[in-house]
Image (cartoon, rainbow over all chains, first blue to last red; front, side, top):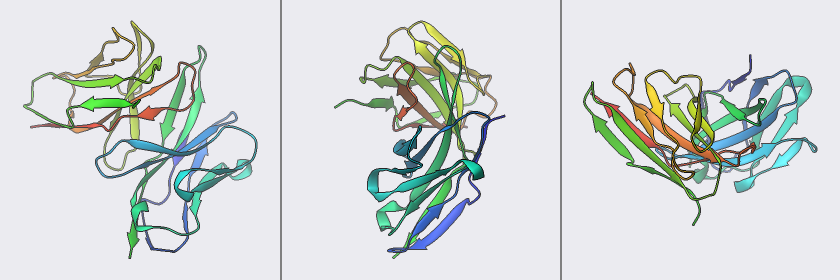
Length: 116
Length: 112
């Protein structure tokens, strides 16, 4: 069955420090992968996506993610964190079904806190 | 401005009452989705609709119902049969065969 694991429930970093959020997926076919960010009480905003091609993808707000097929991972990185990056981050894998229906399977999320 | 609106932002109901959550989009998307979010569990799919007058159950459809009479609108009814209705509900949309889903701001439902 398809699944997404985000091993870290909470992460705290200092402002200006680098960040890496981990994501592992289980999916038999070639996955398409997403990272979304959610501020408290808000909806989800798409940070970046991977469909094919270059395994290092750039997103908004200075984030990037690297797809590693051999490790079934899609980790999110940022070289220097800003206080405004404090939020919850969700990794998701897209699954395609016949008829063109696409389903997203989400991880449980990682809550990021940023110390000044 | 194109986007997805959900209303109200906060909703309070007594146990045993049905309640309907609104979702409207002006992105001209064919597909719409409802998710439920609980702390520490990520998002789980309740219902989805690829076209008007058609919808399918997701992973946790029991106790919920939907309708899709217009392309722009996909209301979700939380019925009294839903055992744990208190949650944050998110609506999303995409082009019909699109891989990217865009989310609304959510409605927090509290049932006491």
